[in-house]
Image (tube, rainbow, N blue to C red; front, side, top):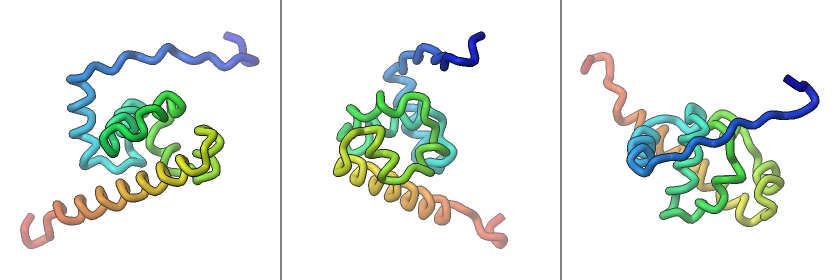
Length: 112
């Protein structure tokens, strides 16, 4: 083990059947709670694959890290300020959508 070198584990292949189940789970899971695999699936499928080419750049980034990124941080990773701004806004929209969805599905004390 060499502390001077960063070791990166090979990325496992994501099977298409697995991607759909991850995508379904991600529909109700807050982005900050996504695994790195769920981030990859979201990037690959969001807006009909509009950001699929970005997914490899975010290899190993989980939802917690992604949701804390600024536009500038995304632009540094992507090398494209405009694309970063669009992706940032898309992520914020997804966060809002899931938050609203969760609020609608939380039973009130009377219903429980």
